Amino acid sequence: MSQLTQFDVLALRREFPILQQEVNGHRLAFLDSAASSQKPRQVIDCLEDYYRRYNANVHRGVYKLSEEATFAFERARGKVARFIGAASPREVIFTRNTTEALNLVAQSWGGANLKPGDRILLTLMEHHSNIVPWQMIAQRTGATLDYLGLDGEGRLVIEELDRKLDERTKLVAVTHQSNVLGTINPVAEIAARAHAVGAVVVVDGAQSVPHMPVDVKALGCDFLAFSGHKMCGPTGIGVLWGRRSLLEAMPPFLGGGSMIKVVELDHSTYADIPTRFEAGTPAIGEAIALGEAIDYLDAIGMDSIFRHEQELTSYALERLADVEGLQLYGPTSPVERGGSLSFTLEHVHPHDVASILDGVGVAVRAGHHCTQPLHRHFNIPATTRASFYIYNLAEEIDRLAVGLEKARKLFM
Ligand code: C6P
Image (cartoon, rainbow, N blue to C red; front, side):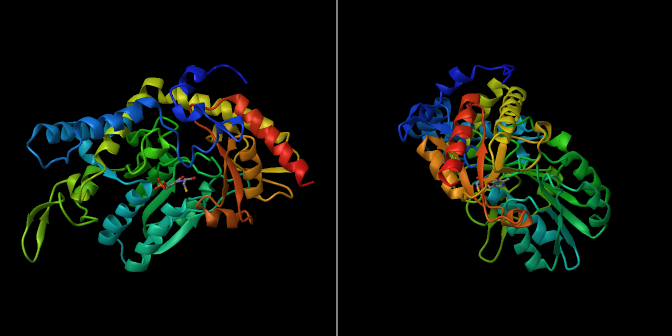
């Protein structure tokens, strides 16, 4: 593998306490960051500092601790806005995760704007989080769903937009990068085509925002959803970015404290954005620690992170091509994909593959990865998936390949 990486991965690994351990007698090779990434000391310390030093509710108290917490919470919102090129921090809504962010758009925007006969266009590679909320709102409003198909290498068949996009299409929801195939989708092109027929564009950025530079202006989308826990941040915190004009016209998602202006006995008026969409006490320390994770990623540089993962992916594609009986799903060219590699191994169940790899300290995920329609499309119940992040090494891919050879021989 070439040594183009701009940062010192060995030094960086030392910042992740969890990576220092042995699993089943082997140094942990963590190849499941698409499910949830590990956290550097800087982020763990930030979260601990909040709970130890200035834990208090936000936007409520006038005492010092509450003011400090409010300041740090809102500063984190500003960091998120800058990180994704948002026009204003007001366009950033803190949610629990990508799933909640997508449900917010579906229920709020969809509930207010969809009617019988309207169409929602999705793709066959979507995570259940970008399918089920749309099914729910389609049932409620009478809108119908349609899906863009895939070619043999798991790329979207963009030409299908010619017949699947028309003035009845009110919303297009697409993943920026597939959590299974690794495919990076041409979101800017899709957004431009969708806007030409007047549709709103929702991008699931759960697998792109942690791994590459993402700028909402360049994407041209209307909403972007992502999760803190996949980008070195804590669990329990996610983001919905939305175009200001759209958010301002949307009704609340959840009702309760914080999101109101005035509450009468029979009705209420609602706060401005983003507070209108943040009912109840938010995940304060987690939002602040997400801001710290963004500082951490920024210091490395998203371009360098993307390049490092592309190198790992190229190397993994070469190494896995040598494993007999291995069938890879997704683009074979590293430039069209990110570092999520899903595969089957002839005669070995994906769960057995994952257990054998665990036996040699290699952590991967097996199953349908919350993409049952995608697996059905390829006519397989499950795959094994290896996914990479900033802290992974080529040597861990070698260990993956050796573990796969072992699994193959055991089941021959
Ligand atoms: N995918 C995986 O192992 P949450 O759970 O809300 O943080 O993220 C949901 C989600 C949405 N979209 C995509 C593309 C995703 O990959 C995920 C999470 C994990 O692939 C857990 S199923």
